[in-house]
Image (cartoon, rainbow, N blue to C red; front, side, top):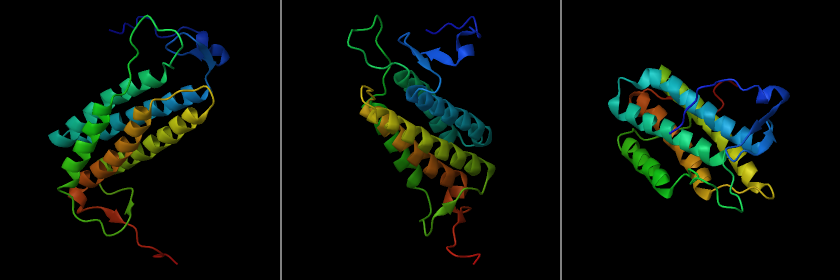
Length: 192
């Protein structure tokens, strides 16, 4: 269980923070940047859920994704160490990625066929889900960049989770747009 009694610590006033391992790093460290974007994705989902509460299927999927994003943030904030930590670090598991795939398939089965790229918009829920999708894609890019750094280890399942989540958010945005019926489609060269 996490207990947070004190909100400000003043340790970040000089531009540094601590990872879950206690290791001090700059707030601009690629690991902090990656889990910061995961946090932004979660906040975007919270905003989207203001508009999806009327759809119990979609809202439940997004609620699970929000919880898993906290798991992912904990995973990224706890780099692997040579010595065994005093606690078992929380990691994204293959089952969490597989659940996203099942939910994508569940929502996608009821969508109208796609005949063009979809512009972000339509309903308020769809627009918010598109925003969450783009922030999730940024989190994915930053996590991949972190994994490419020498000495930094990132679980392949963490990257897979972000990739599947952005796919889920695309499908969810179409679901929120009357199952694709109210999608705003791109018309190539329409304004030439």
